[in-house]
Length: 270
Picture 1 (tube, rainbow, N blue to C red):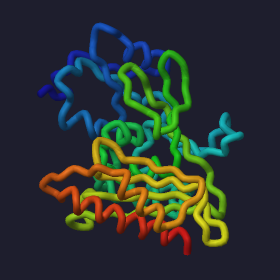
Picture 2 (spheres, rainbow, N blue to C red):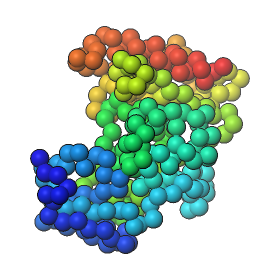
Picture 3 (spheres, helix red, strand yellow):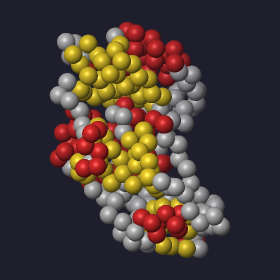
Picture 4 (cartoon, rainbow, N blue to C red):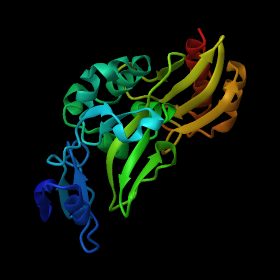
């Protein structure tokens, strides 16, 4: 398996147009790199060139000035996970659960290099961060033939495109989020995990987004305009077809999903 030293080309463009032209060359497999935490340990065999994004001003956390109608907070694609963890606005965002899931996803050394976009691209189905971002209704700005705003829930990775930012909705005072997992140890990635976001009115859960991780290649998202906790548990358990592996049986995963859904939604309705 090739390492970065064996790659034929290394580029460091100074504009998005230049980066995209390099990525879209049909005759050479080229991938973007920000922190390199995913590519450096094991580059895919067909990667022949990398495009370093560090000179493109894609590391920031700020309000989305061009998305005022949607009231969103934007994070540049190359922003490191540690920068996000240390940002005051993010620490206060969504009851602190976004920070919690980042800490649960990567160690301190990895967080110092790993970018948010790279972490999304490399995420597995049990990723705490990806599960939480789905529950929060994160959107991605994708640069390809044109610039598009794509809901993370509908996004599929495509070659020769570039994620430039991740947008999070600004939440009302009545909107809260929660996250829980089951793992072998507190430091391990989840066997299963559940993230939820809901608007709480008089103890009722409205505009509910429930993301279930650890069940396949990507987390499962359940959306309901309004739902009770017992109904949500029933829907979640009946919606999944979990695998069995050396971490847990399918039966254990199904049971724990029910437990975690009840736990996160109960915490939101208090």
